[in-house]
Length: 338
Image (tube, rainbow, N blue to C red; front, side):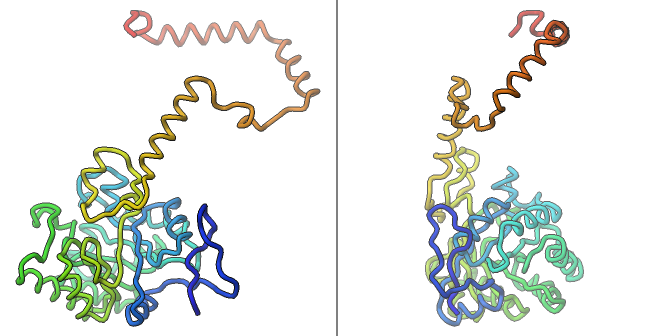
């Protein structure tokens, strides 16, 4: 049965063809897509509105990534992100997805899985039980294989992550591409193979040369989802805010990776919209009658105005008292400093 690419009919979306039905994306369906040569589309999103759009566009996988720390919370890296923050954002994204929508994957943040497979399992179980995730993703290669195996054996689907692993930015010397020598490239491949053997249903490959991304896709039976890994991987993932150009601010632009194509200029339009709103408010042009839709019947209006006349003097006295209190409390106003 063909899956319908689209759900809630957002602006510009396409109605489903008659007789078709969209089917929930699962870890198993991604494996089938790999076998059939179907490209996998994944978007990283962090909240209800973005998840609504991701679902409405028929995206295969919604990833609640720990990049939320840098994109939405203003952290300089992903390391400060806590499991509680991930659960909060995962729950919000979950509410934006339909029952027949994308696979929802939640990142295990730094410090929530490295200690032992048992700690990793508890964190993964919380993502499913409390966050509503369908699967979890964790960073690292062979050294986290035991944790991956433990989590999978206990019933939680796991996506791996090799290449640039942002949680390890302290030891990598920054957000730097990986696998750029033959030895390092082979290490990335070996890490991915170890994750596959441990039971991972997919592996994200970040910031590696295209030849490495191609080798990963050709040598693994599970899907390789690339982000800055060239065109030969089995699918692609980008961050919602990055691919839509959602944030029009120099702070965010410093973190947008050079492999990210901007497919829409939402940030600039958002800024222009906010500026227009401000200008109309300042000029008392908004709201006009069109956007003041609530009306009182004429006889009720007359009654209300009559009620206001009854105690007009008392209310004026109270208004003056309130005005005096506010002015007396404002030292700068009294000193004419403003």
